[in-house]
Structures are given as C-alpha cells and as structure tokens.
Amino acid sequence: MILNFPLVILEVKEKINSNYGKKGTETYPDFSVLMSVYKRENPKFLDQSLCSIEGQTVLPTEIILVEDGPIPTILQEVINKHRSNFVNDFKVIKSIRNQGLGASLRLGTKFVSTDWIARMDSDDISVHNRFELQLKEVVREPNLAVIGGQIQEFAGESSNIVGYRKVPTTESLLRQFIKWRSPFNHPSVMLNKDALQKVGGYMPYGNLEDYYLWARIIVYKFHVKNIDRVLVKMRVDEGMYQRRGKFSNIKYFYRLRKFLYKHKVLTWRERFLGDWLMTANILIPGWLRKIIYRKILHRYSN
Image 1 (cartoon, rainbow, N blue to C red):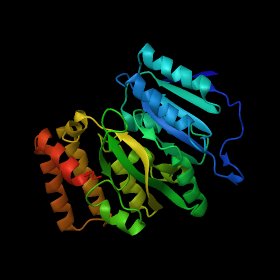
Image 2 (cartoon, helix red, strand yellow; image 1 turned 90 degrees about the horizontal axis):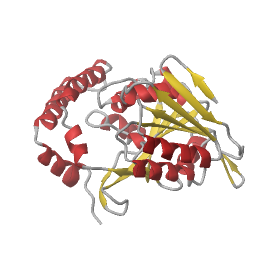
Image 3 (cartoon, rainbow, N blue to C red; image 1 turned 45 degrees about the vertical axis):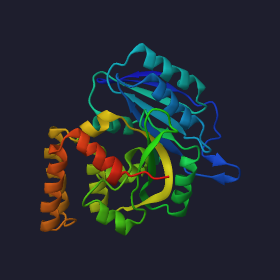
Image 4 (cartoon, rainbow, N blue to C red; image 1 turned 120 degrees about the vertical axis):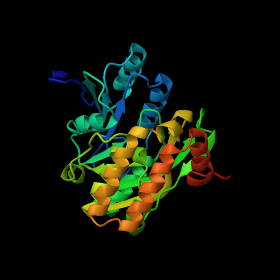
C-alpha cells in the first residue's frame, strides 16, 4: 500500500503473523520500533541493525523506518529485503528532503499505531532480548514514560569493545544526572507515546533533540528509569568525537540549560558551571575530546 502526502510517501507491508508481543505464556504490550536512515548510511550497518530487531525474543508489532530524504539504490535494496522478511508490519516513510533526525522522528511518530515506541539507530545493534527486558519493566511499572538501559560501544566489529556509556537507573539519580549530561542512551530507550506527545514530541534541536526531550519529560515529572543491563551495542567512529564539538551546538546547550534553570532543575551556580563545561567541550580539539570520552566518561575495562 502506498499513500501520498504533501511531503512524504508511506509504504506499508501488512502483517502476516499476528503472534507478536508474546513469548510463551507471557503477553506484553504492543510496541513499535522507530528508526531513521539517510543517504550516507552504510548498507552493511543498516542490515545488521535490522537483523538485530528481527532476531529479538519478543518482536515489535511494527517497524517504522523514515527515509530522511532520497537514499541510494543499495540502501533501498537492504530495506526492501527486510520489508519482505519481517513477519509483522513494516512501514517506510519516504521524506522528500533531508530534515535531520529530530524532524524525521517527529514525522515517524505520526505513523506509530501502538502505545510504546522503541528507538533504534540505523547503525547500532540491539542485544537479542532487549525488548523483552524493557517490556517486563513496562508490565511491572505501567506508568513509566521512558525505560532505557546501558550501551556498549564498539568500533569496526561488534567484538571490538572500546567503551560503555553508563547512566543511572533510579529516578532520583536521573534527575541529578540531567544537570550535567544526557540521562538516557537514546538508541536504547522505549517511550510511552502518550507521554511523548504530551511534552511536544521530538523537535529539531541541533544534535540535542534527545537531551531536550529528556529535559521536558523530567521537568513535567513523568516516571522514568534505566535498566542496569546493556541493551544496545553502539557503533562509534572518529567522527563521533568531532560531532560532539560542533560549534553550532553551543546555542542549543545554552537554551537547554536555560530551560532547566527556568524550571528549577538547576541552581544558578549549577547553570553557570555547566555552561562553562559545555563551552570548554566545544572548544577543545577533537583528539583531546576523544581521550576524555574514552578514558573518563565512557571508560572500558575488562
């Protein structure tokens, strides 16, 4: 089925297997996986990412993949293969032009038919029972708005582990952590769609669209937590450290921290110190930023 919209084309493969959201005698809430892909994505990485969804112990009701602008034929072939292979719904939203991740996720959310949305980046790999672990928490605490987890960073092959990004698990610690750093690993989260919409959904916000979303969710006192388990293997490259130092991000950092200060998440001193640290992170050379992230912030030890 193909539907035409002013800015997008939607392609839907109807499900042929209704046994989703179940494992053995356990039944879990329906959920969707939301992804975005653009022209520079590596086809091999996208294939591995989609395979990690299809190999889950609990399958999503649907995969929603936004093509953020025109993509090359080789990427289209990977997507078509998985649309054919996946046993449930697979919706492909083709955006006429490239808009960035925040706008793509906002667009994709409009086509989500379930109450829960699992985020997935197009070059990362979910561990085989990621969704099952998160859904168990949703069943245990149905008032959750966000349930995330830890990520393992790798370079090249998934066995080449270079670091971890560890985030707090309890709500009280998350509310402290957000003062200095993003409290969730974005590719690992599962979001309640109603809560997401109540805070305004995804918004274009430089490279900080996820951090700004968490700020709004925490400011409006939704229930959140992280699992103390690795849920996603995240691919990193040299470009990641350069992107974290993009000067264009600095205005978004300032706006975000002003928002947190306005809503009394930050004290005046915390705002001043945080602004200074964020500015320093932008200004330092990429090689030094890489050392700080790998040796301190995302340190890995056997």
